[in-house]
Amino acid sequence: MARQENRDREERDSEFVDKLVHINRVAKVVKGGRRFGFAALVVVGDQKGRVGFGHGKAREVPEAIRKATEAAKRTMIRVPLREGRTLHHDVEGRHGAGKVLLRAAPAGTGIIAGGPMRAVFETLGVQDVVAKSLGTSNPYNMVRATFAALTKEDSPRSVAARRGLKVSVLQSRRRDNTDDAAPAAAEA
Image (cartoon, rainbow, N blue to C red):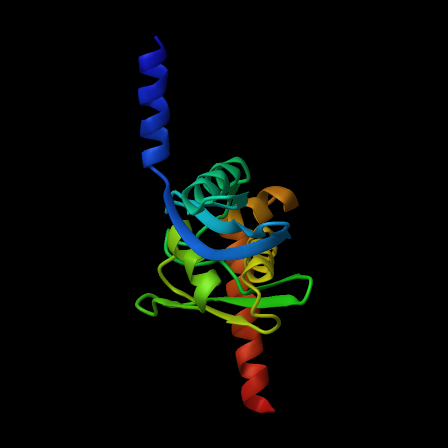
């Protein structure tokens, strides 16, 4: 019975992709010299719209990474993706001094994002996105700001359900508004 549960857990873990974003070495000065510890930041995702990040600290690097991976699996969020490849709309997120701007992109664009944000998008399963970090370059704050932005992401289905409309009605209204805006812009 225990062996079956262990196998199930391994299969569940194998569906996730994890990326090490940052390792920080910290020193504690003690009587005999310095005692080193390590802090790891890891992003975990299933490449199908679920992603999470975790932070782990330990005396050894592998143990810190393991702790961070476990923490990331506990804090996963689901992000709605358009056609399974990009975001539904542009969104901004911030955490502390970290400010990020995420934009939906047409097919073939690829992931245009720096360091920590790229790791989040690769594990999330996004293939086309343009992202810009406008604030700090601190990887912890960049990842948290990216997650703040991703939690604001909404799908047309959820918006339609919230407003009590059908998705087709919502999208036809959007097309009508863009058609009305185009002649007005041409006249000006």
